[in-house]
Structure formats: C-alpha cells, structure tokens
Amino acid sequence: MSLAKLTSISTQTLSLLLERQRFQTLPSYSSDPLPTAPQNHHLQQITQNLNALRTGILALEAKEGTSDAVTLLRNQHERMRGMLGPGEDAGVESMEPERVTPEPSTARLIPTPPPETVFTPYADDPDAGPEQMLQTQRLMMDQQDSQLDLLSHSINRQRDLSMQINEELDVHTGLLEELDTDLGNTESRLSGARRRLDRVAKGARNNGSAVTIGALILILLILIIVFKT
Image 1: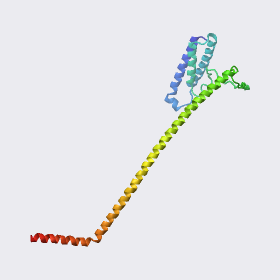
Image 2: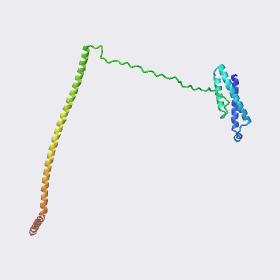
Image 3: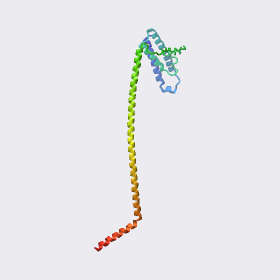
C-alpha cells in the first residue's frame, strides 16, 4: 500500500471520528444513549480503517524504512485510536510495541576476595652508617637542649613575676594594717569625745534649774543698774 493511499485512509478515518463525536454531542444522543445504526456503521468502518492503516504502515516501514511521513502516520494512528471511547478500541491494535520487562538475572554473584595486604617489617635506614647515626643523634640532642633552655628561661621568668607579685602583696598588706591601726585610733578618740559629751549633757540636765535661776538673777541685776542710772 502506497503512502498516498495510507494518507487517504487516515484522512477518511479522521473525518469519520469527527462526525461521530459531533453526533454524540447532539441532544438526541443524550436522551437516547443506545447506539444507533449510523454509529455502529461508523465504529465498524473506523475500526477497519485503523487496522488497515496499521497494516499498511508496518508494511511500508518494512519495505522503505522509517521516514518522517511514516512517523507522522504512526502518530496520527495513535491519536485517532485515542479518540475512541472506553472499550471501543479493543479491536484496534496499537502501533507501539509491547515492552518486555527483562527478568532479573539469577546468576549468583561471586564476591571478590579483598587484596591481601603485605606488611613490611620496620627497619632503620639501611644505608645509614654509624657516623651518620651518631650525627643524627647529636643533632637531636642539640635540639632537645635548645628546647630545654627555652623552657628554663620561661620558668625563670614566671618565678620572677611570682616574686614581684608577692612583694606587691606584702606592700598592700602593710598598707591595710596601717589603715586598720588608724581606724582603731580614730574610733578610740571618737569614743572619748562621745563620753565627754554625754557627761556634759547629763550635768546640764541635773543642774538646769540652778543655771536658770542664776541667769534670771543676772538679768535682774542688769535691769536694776540700768534703771538707776
């Protein structure tokens, strides 16, 4: 079957499908959903055309190979097959090949043993002679002496700082002791002054009347002297 014939069948089938869909949208179809004779005729014709189109496409592919026109016809066939209602495409085979799911391999995997680790015994440098070993040890001892000198210098510095801090603490302790002594003396003087004030206040309370009489007599004498003169 030629490409032109297949294109004609595809166009005719598409027209029948569109006519069938238009008929299904009419009110008469909604009130009477049972299939009528024109519908059955369209469905049978559409099914025959789709099967013939599929057979022709496969034959054309086997003869001339896959081309753009054949690919368009394949896609058109699948779209028209999808325009059929549920269950109506049972008599039309799809152009898509069935995918075969490969069965999982039952071959048993044999684990690969890990590579063996070869341990080499530790040994000093075999090329080093006695003189070189002595020189290396002497160099290591010199480095250790330098580190010990630095450590000793740091310890001496810490000791000097500790002694200075101790001297400053002694000075502060002496100042605090002197301040404590001065506070004690001040408290003693304040206590003596408070006692003297208490005695004066007590004497004033006890001799208050005599002092008042003496003051009045003094005032009277002053008045007599003033009036006589």
